[in-house]
Length: 276
Image (cartoon, rainbow, N blue to C red):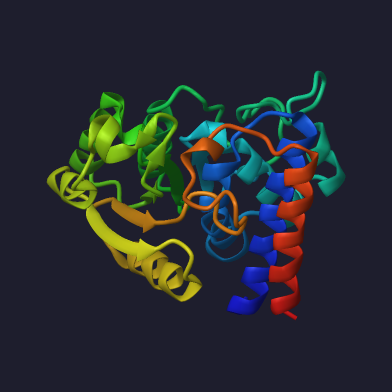
């Protein structure tokens, strides 16, 4: 898929984030938007998945370790065809299969229930280990927040993955620099992120999270890396694509009201026009 088509899909994913959180009156748009290009590249280019057969034993696995950014994952799944886009307006509603955090029992395409920060990478490492034991060809991808990696469990899982040489595991850190309480370096500084993963025997790649050529090269390098897991540190912009949300910590966990919804959709319409 060429970059222009990927950008169009990513813009639709961002549209889905805005639609879902507005309809719910709750949710986490900031980190969903910063990761939208990552979600798009994974589901439309990188991963071996089939929306018509979401439980295929041979499929690649994805674990959203930063589970609060479920609006971004749901928007990507809908865009990829796992369920109708119209269902995005049911986000967080009673009886909806699109709950505030991903549930593998509720949502087609979700491989792991997540939400308690730090646990997703542990589940992903376990999946990767199972793949090794079964001599399976699938790969496992997990997306973490840069605030999330302040959790100790992240590093226990990383120690395990490095020690077991899980080269079928790719850990992606959405490094947008902001967490719910403010800049990550002020809350509980996790830097240098790349050096930490290197210390746990990871192959590390730093990349612009909004550059599809850079993402393509990074994931290719990860596939070609043998004998160790890969960590992709994806440098991103919180709220990417929505002018008044970009770089604003206040949009970590706040839904747009009606006026803000209209402004956000206008921003995305303008981006869409530029991609024609």
